[in-house]
Amino acid sequence: MSEFRPVEGSFDAEDARFAIVVARWNSDITENLLAGALRALTRHGVSENAVQVYRVPGAFELPLAANKVAQAGKVDAVITLGCVIRGGTPHFEYVCAETTRGIGHVALTTGLPIAFGLLTTDDLKQAQDRSGDNEENKGEEAALTALEMVSLLKKI
Image 1: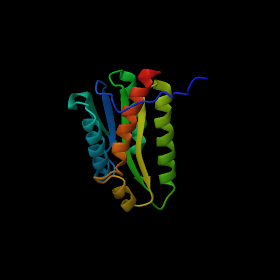
Image 2: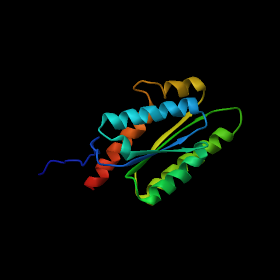
Image 3: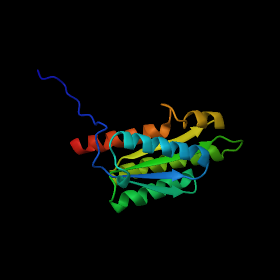
Image 4: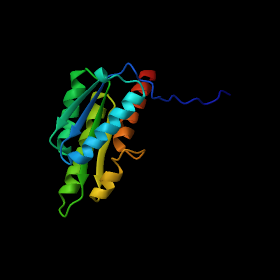
């Protein structure tokens, strides 16, 4: 009986090209997410020339821009970064649900890794905690996900 050996990705995707689509809304948070993503990519050998950053007005615009970038065929993965903080109206639920659905749809229809770096928090403190210069930075996590998925898809 043979031993089961899973196929896994790694963070070795130095030759890959990445797009980062980042929302300007809540820019104090999203700029920290962007810094985290760039740190992770650089730490794993991705050159500055292999990364293009695109800015969109808010989280709701992330899926459209990610789709357009993915369809252009110039990148191996797209990292989406945004932040939606709960308020006193149902707006939070609508934006979070549709943005999440849209990002997932882009991944499935383009066949490219579309890393999900959208913070959906109850308050500003939670957003700050998840975008700080620490191991909790969700921008860094999204970049690591993109690296791993690019590597995995090359093995499939």
